[in-house]
Image 1 (cartoon, rainbow, N blue to C red):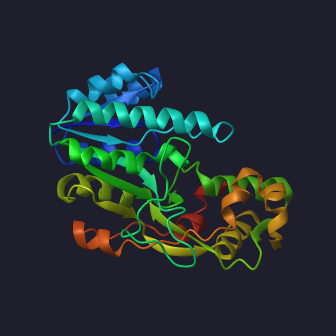
Image 2 (cartoon, helix red, strand yellow; image 1 turned 120 degrees about the vertical axis):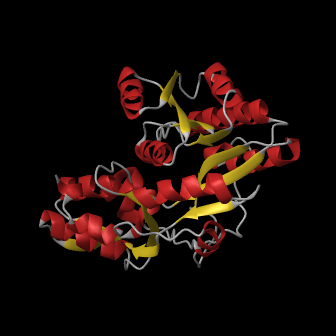
Length: 297
């Protein structure tokens, strides 16, 4: 099976390419830069040059593939409207290319914002609808293609997909701690984030390609909730810094943009995903990765 992967050289995408190649898939990866192209070629993947704004490349890669895994995103926190626009245009282009084929279309999403006051589950529909919503409402947009002869599957990632080399949200918290001399948590520190190891996320994606039914919502969640206080304490130990509560109204000032999220309860469950895919998270926990020192090098 030939699989077209966008974001193929990214944090999750590169692990996914490795997972697919290890299981005999023919992988074509979208590469924006020479470095990304060289990395993909060295692994044995085929390279298609382009980016999210190159809709012709997205159309070609999708048309030539037996399945598409869309993981790329601009993640431009200073211009979310542009990120959302580009994401929606990309998903529409891929969906149109796959229309009538019955081929799988796995699209990245997240567990954030699905539920309040409890861990989100796969039964929670995404409230993000329309071009002005988070990620341009692309999970729901992809699901619209089920009626157009496509097999859409949502890949909902935990707010932290952790591991050695991670430059995501946890690394921003480490940067804030270094800059302020304090490893902080918001309020009483009881709110928590779902977490998953990168290797477990990649394996879930591969199993989702193989086993997930059309319209499935898959949760890449290893730990349902790691409290903000636990995270702050682990960072404090790693950096040798004091751990303190930060008032919610001071969160943005202390943490930067990540303060918008760190005090939110973004807990989630993957119970349904584990049953559908016969998938069980087996990689290191977030606590393991923080204690290993990889985030503090």
